[in-house]
Image (tube, rainbow, N blue to C red; front, side):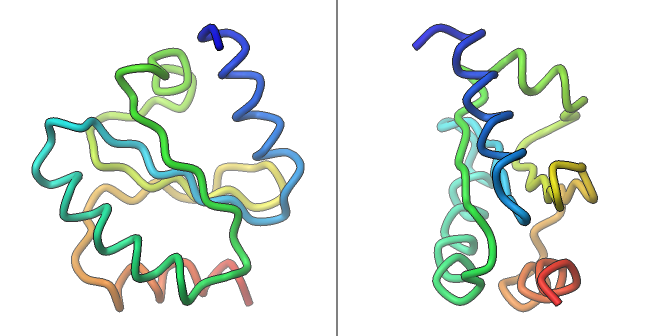
Length: 104
């Protein structure tokens, strides 16, 4: 899949779901690996979201279009609109609480 097609696919997923969480990371980022493990736990509990994980090495256009400043980054979309970007993954409860704000 080329970058333009991938960008369209991501946008389709975001538009098609009421709540979408997009986790942007790079594989060589140690903090991203830790954040990914936290999200593994949260994803099992917070079922209201469509979850998307993006290796930004392959989704540069998406990163630029969303003005992602660093990784890891969790983008929260509600009804296709970007609600929040989270760069600091303090703890599982912190992420859970952030997501529940939008799921209620």
